[in-house]
Image 1 (cartoon, rainbow, N blue to C red):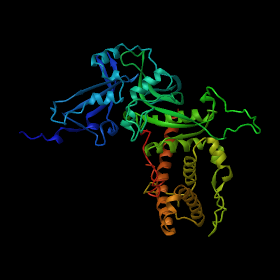
Image 2 (image 1 turned 90 degrees about the horizontal axis):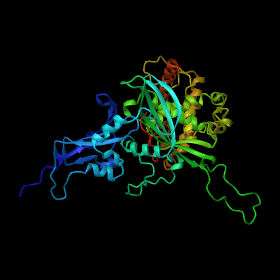
Image 3 (image 1 turned 90 degrees about the vertical axis):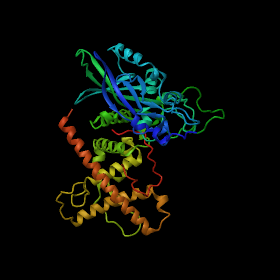
Image 4 (image 1 turned 30 degrees about the horizontal axis):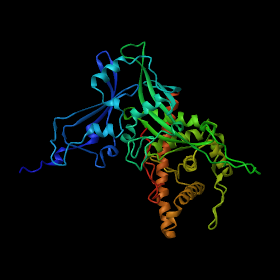
Length: 481
C-alpha cells in the first residue's frame, strides 16, 4: 500500500495566493488600475490562513473600479486527488456559501468583461454627492448614503470582504459573532450611513467622458444618546405611558460611532484618509442630533490619523487654544493637586462643544499642552536638535505637564495599579509616561508636517499607554489611511 503524499507540500498561504485588483474598460479590453493583496484571511480560511490541495494556486478577485462588481477566478498547475478525509479546499464554496461574496462574483469571466464594456458613462456612485475636493491626481468625491438604499446595500455586499481582509478583527455589518450562520441581520439598516470616496478622472479613451475609481469608504452607526435622560412629567397621570409607534432615529439625540474605515492600499499615503475622516467628523459635528462622535476599536495607524485630525480641529476653537499650563501653581508635597491648567473649569464645556469622546479629548489636550513646553524639556524625535539647558521655570512647566498625564493614566489604569505596591506603581507610571512623551513627539511632528503640506498645497498608539493597560483590545475596525 502506497503511503500518503506529503500533505505539507499541498498547503499554500492564502494571503499570497489571493490578489485583488481594480479594473476598468478600455478599447483594448479591461485594463488594471491597481493590484494589492489581503493582510488577513484567518476569518475566511482558518487561523493558519492556509489553502490545501493545490500547486501554484492563484486566486484573482477582480473589481470593476467604479461600481465594484466583483469577479473571482482561480488557476493552479496541479490539484490534489482526495485521499480519505483529505481533499482540496473548496474555495468557491467557502467564499460563496460563507456569504463573503455575492453570487455575481462567480459568473463567467466573459459575462463580467462584456458587462464592464457595456456599463454606461452616466454611472454615478450610490447615495448623494456629499463633498468634492481636488487632489494631485484628479477630482475626488465623497458620496453619502444609507444602508436602507438598495444601491448602497448592494455595494456593501460587494466590498464587505475587504473588511476582514484589511482590518484585523474586522467583521461584516449585520453579522452575529456568536453564530456560524452567514446570514446577516439588516434590521437596523436605518442606523448605518456610508461615505464612499471616489476619484473622478477624464477617460483615457474619451477625454469628454469621466470615469470613477473607488478609493475607500467609511461606515457610521448611530446609537441613541441617553443624556439627558428621558423622564416622565413631574406629576404624571395614572395612565401615562411611553410614546408608542415609529420613532424616527434621525430626530433623536444620538452618539455617532465611526465603525469601519478603509482606504485601499494602492491609494494610501496621499492624504485621502484624512480628507475622508475630516469630512465625516465635520458632518456630524454640525449635526444637531449628534452629541458625541466616537471610533470603534481603532488600530494604531488610524489612531495617528485621528489624533492629528482632531488636534487640527480643536485648534480652530478659540477656547481650546487659550488652554495652557498654569505656571503659578505650586505643587504640594501631599494632598490633592490643584487645577494645573488655566481655564480648567471650561474643559468639559469645550469637550461637549467639540463632541469628542472624553478619553480622546484629553489625550489630544495633552499633545496640545506638550507642544507649549520649551525646547529644553520637550521630547523630540530628532537626535540632532541643539537643546538648551532647562531653567527652573522650564522644569516646573515640564512637571506640571507630567502630572496631568500621570493623573489620566492613573485614572484609566486604576484597577490594575491598585493591585501593586506604591513603588512599583510609581515605576510603572514613569515608564508609561516616557512612552507617551515619545508617542506625542512623533504625532506632533507628523501634525506639523501635515499642516505645512496643507499650507503649501492650500487648496501604534502605544499601550494606554503601556503594559499597565491589560484591558486594551486592538481588534481594529479601521484600515491604514
